[in-house]
Image (cartoon, rainbow, N blue to C red):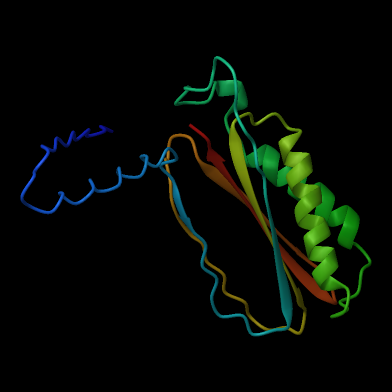
Length: 177
């Protein structure tokens, strides 16, 4: 990525109007190269979606690492176990209640985000998406599209169902350069 500097020089003119002021400088280049688009389609039931996004600020000598160390790379199998553990613990025996699922989905998203953060995936931004819907035997189609670095970024997902509800959780790990 290169930055182009432009210098403007103006001469003092006595018979004409003063020249217009120089244009404002260009905005600084975008420092994060990921563009994320999450898209969900075809929901045929009452359901609630919640998400949690981590905000991590990196400081210090490793601020310019462009690849994670192997031990800190996002590992979907570990993240899936974190998801499964929290969702099974919190939703086993729970009945679908339209009044409670909004708070429940937000609470689940925050709990999962905190658990995954504690797993040691340094320099990763986490996006946690939780969808809870009523189980009525219907079909549900979900999709997500992301533009990211295939070497560093990844995701994990898990589905939980009981007689009353279903829950789909997706955790996206995006490496912060």
